Length: 559
Image 1 (cartoon, rainbow, N blue to C red):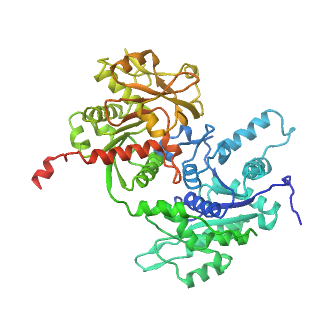
Image 2: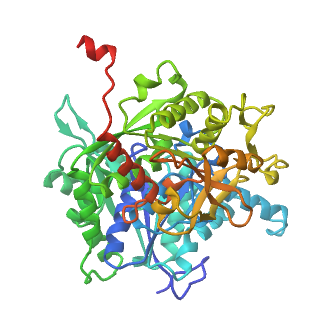
Image 3: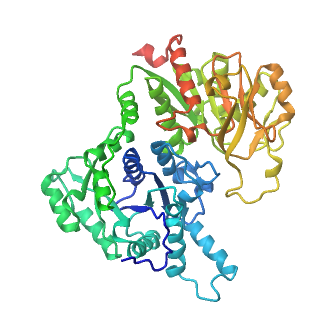
């Protein structure tokens, strides 16, 4: 019997999997969701993943990286949670604005509709108005006919006040849809107490009890643990949490997030999900390329050290996509990339050789604001003068332009107007369209833009095609007033936007590998398609390693 009440049934309705979390945050709901999606995709199903975040920001675009890690940008220009990066890297399919929703966006929509008179004078409440808007967004991707399965990760932890509207919406959806059209996977923690020398299931039991109190019974328990769960523990969890015995899935800690799909396959998570959703598991799973990649990651034939010059290095999630892109680029070259983080605030001319001299390549990271800017510029100078493979992303590219202006063109005080509005040489300046904008959220140059590459350039050799599209997130650009001077002195614009002539890529042909890009290539690097710029940097670092003479520091001499 069809139980649709509030939701209009669609002919191509997908199956819905919801991933919730309990006990503690940072258990890895995003990695589990991506891993499960990968297994289902490998069995021939069309899968997408979406993230619902309980914070009131409309999007993470204005959040400091220390607060929420990196801001991931989609093809259509949405500023989203970093988990969407995991979704794309695992599935090799792009996400969109619809794949990330926040409480702020939900309330903004409802309040706008109320101001427009959409509710006909009714009192606007969490139930049904907020939950209906959440529901509409949760079911949206499944109603397009493009996907067989939609996995929804609900941010936060069960029991949090912020997450309650999402769990209530989940309860309503389960009541309205057919029994086998929805599934709830609850990710929880089985802690190991050293003093007792045993794993404890009580936190998981309480977490499930909390979820059931709200009216949602999990179908599958995914238990994060440092040690193997015994059969007796599985039976105990199944009994006290009211799930089937084979629905207690162990999620052991692993050395690489890319090993998680294989661990989930061992636990038969995909088969359990398909059985519960009444979907066929007849098609054999194909993880050939994934296994080949993981073998290269696990068994590298060498290693290179590449410096990541940034100001948020204390939090790895601030540069999450860059770190993952290095893993992809390293696997393509059969080497392990050891990323050595260098805080740009601690770098200057007096210690540049000591801090950078033993590296095989440098990447100057993106960012905003003046803090640490001079350290980035100093690192680029050191790379350029010593012909160390260099790669600059967004602000990193802009710093390369500033360094060249100061030290090659002799433009004293050259800078970006972001850092110094009164610079005598604004080689980096704000786009005209941005100068009248006052609101900060969602107003930058965002999403995919085209770029045409110049012939006989490093960029063209790396990409292997003249026309590309890359994702942007910035307000400031190369000032084309200075372009002729730069190119005459040896820094060329090897890539431009065909619509407005904005410089997208700069490089120095005299150096073996020196390239800066205005966009964010790390956002498009996946397991199946490592980004060519990262592949190229790692290859250049391997070649440079063969001619590098180790730096002898005072500490080494004393040792």
